[in-house]
Picture (cartoon, one colour):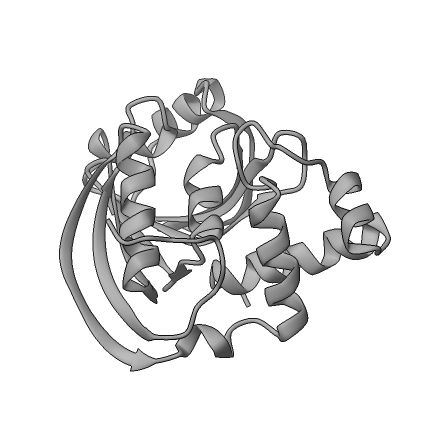
Length: 220
């Protein structure tokens, strides 16, 4: 794997298609049980708690059986969910999940995600962009956690795209948060401590981080 020193570097960016196999304990593995339905991750972001939780918008298209809702109600990986929209052939869910590892790994390695992300048969097909070393490190982090990752395609496609994603101030805050272990699990520094390091109010730092996460995860 490529060397990563924790800082954002210039260089060619790579667009890759990765098939990530979800662990059996995650509720999206239910896609194996309902192959007739189309699942898509429309948006997702880590929510500031200690530890983080994952907040996602999931679109499910097709004739949705009540048995699926019953399984969601009792699934141990879901802290909560709500039905945002529902029609005869589609449902939009807002989900809160306990396992935030994938989201934090995306943010920590500065991976840009194309949305929506289709999910089928327990696997999500991610199209991601970053430097090659960041993508290598991202894959290694997932594999170290026991997730299986298949590389469907990978290739250089543009120069310095990451420089257009975050403002200089956001780069500075992101790098410090990463270096101080804010995205580690367990977290090595609290939001309050990080705000003190940067010399900003806790609420201001929380807003900055939310904007960073939204940009990296493609939700704005």
